[in-house]
Image 1 (spheres, helix red, strand yellow):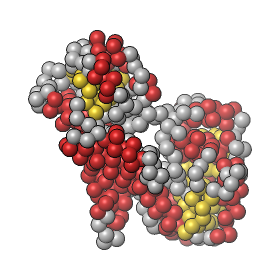
Image 2 (cartoon, rainbow, N blue to C red; image 1 turned 135 degrees about the vertical axis):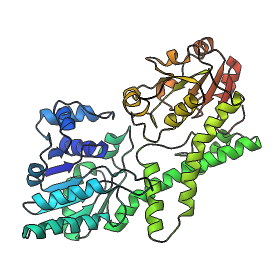
Image 3 (cartoon, rainbow, N blue to C red; image 1 turned 180 degrees about the horizontal axis):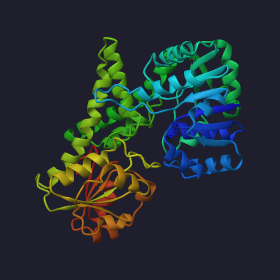
Image 4 (spheres, rainbow, N blue to C red; image 1 turned 120 degrees about the vertical axis):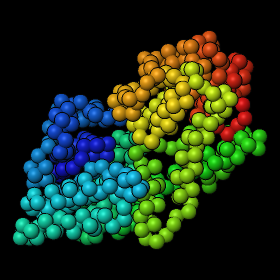
Length: 442
C-alpha cells in the first residue's frame, strides 16, 4: 500500500518505519524542513531501541522517504495517517491546532479516493470534526472526491515501541464506514498473523479507548504510590504489600511498583485531557482528578523526604542524580520527576551532578540549559564523587547492580534516596548505607 504519515514525531516515525519494514511504500511528511533533512541522512531525532535500524534498512530499500512537501505527500498516497502532536494547553485541554491544520491540508490537496486515519491521541469527537474540515476544503474547491475517515489509536510504550507495533496486544480501529474493514485487515495482516488482533468499533469508542487504557494504567501507579505513603506512615513495608496484592491474579504485578510518579508524553497529558473534556460534558471525573493530584504530590513527597533528612537546609550541599528520563529505554524527559527534583535542589541552594545513559543532550538543550550549579557527568560513578547523597530517579539497567563499595567510598555521606525501590534494604544496611526508599521507613 502507499501510505503517507503526516508528522515525524515519536508516533509518526515508529508508524511509518514499521509499515515500510513490511513492504509498504511510505512517505513520512513534516513541515519542519530541518527535521526532514536530518531524517534523510538517517539521523533520528529521538532515541527508541530498534527504530534507527529499521529506518536505515527501509531507506536503503526505497521503502520510506521523508518529505516536507505536504501536497506531494498527500497526492501520492492511498492512506493518510495523521500523527501530528497534540500538546497540552495550560488548562489541560489538548491543543488541536496542528491536527486541524493537517486536515485542512488534506482537504486542499486530496486528489483521489483515500482513507484518512487519525493516529494522534485526540479527544472524543475530533476525528469527525476533521472529516468536516476536509469536506469544507473540498467544498471550497468545488470538487467531489470521496474519502473515508477512521481512528486508529496507538498503544506504544516508549522504549519498546517497535516491539509493540510489530507484536501488538490489539489493534483498535474506529470506523464510520464498515465497508473499509478490508483495508485495515490487509494493512495490519503482517502484524496479526497468528490470530486476529483487530477490534473494530465506532469512532467515538475508539478515541475514548486510548484515553481509558492510559487512565487505567496511571490509576494503578497513583494507587500504589498512595498506598506507599500510607505504609510508610504506619510503619509497614510497601514492597511486602505489593507482593501480597500482586500475587492475586485479578490484580497482577504490572504497574504497581512504588515510584516518584509517572511522567512522559502520554499519562500526564491524557489524564488532564480526560478531565477537561469530561468537564466540558458537565461531568467531574473524581477518580481521575485524584490520580492526577496524587502523581503531582508524589514528586513533592520524594523531595520532602530528601530535604527533611537534612533539617530543611541543603544550602552548599551537593547531590548526585542517577537517571533523568521519565523511564528507562528513552531520552524523553517530559513530565519526568528529575526535572522537578533537580530544580528544587538548586533552588534550595544545593549543587547537583547528573548522569543518564540517553537523556543528557535533551537535559542540556531543553530542560536545564539555564540552570547554574549543575554538572553533567560522563559516568554514573562520577556523579557520586564528593556528593552528600545519591538520588536514584530512573531505573536504568546499568543502575541495578553497581559497585556499592565504590559508591560508599566516593560519597561524603553514605546516603541513598531510591525513587524506584531498586535496591535491597537489608543489603544496603549491611554495607553501611543510610537507605531511604518509597513506602518504607529508613
